[in-house]
Amino acid sequence: MMLIYSLFAQDVTMNYAGLEDTVITDPMVSLRCKEISERRSSYIEYKNRILMNLEKNRLLRNITPNSRIVLLAKLDKNFDNLSHELFLARQKIPTVEEEMILKGCPMAHF
Image (cartoon, rainbow, N blue to C red; front, side, top):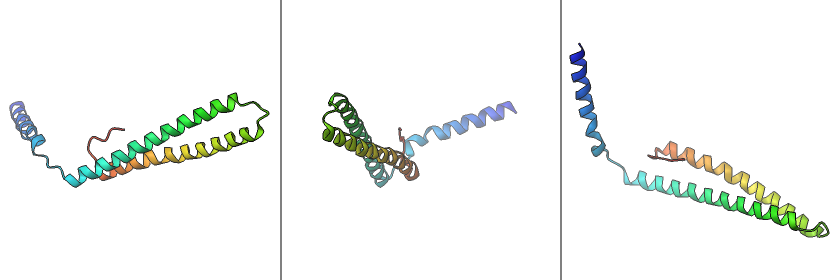
């Protein structure tokens, strides 16, 4: 019984060993996955730029004297707008990752 099992296991592994070279990839799928991956990268870069601008805004807010009321109001409004943009950007990234999974993109690293 063990001999039959070991022969069967060797036969199965030999059959699967050659499949790596015979996998056919559709060029359109690769192109689509590349486009989705580039879109995801651009959203991540956009999110990082927003985070950088929020940090600049925070530093400007800290060094601005309290007597500059109009400037402080503009910085606060800018902070609110950037926070909203960051919220939207953070929502887009998982959506694109889900699209990558649904489209069947291989080797999608998150």
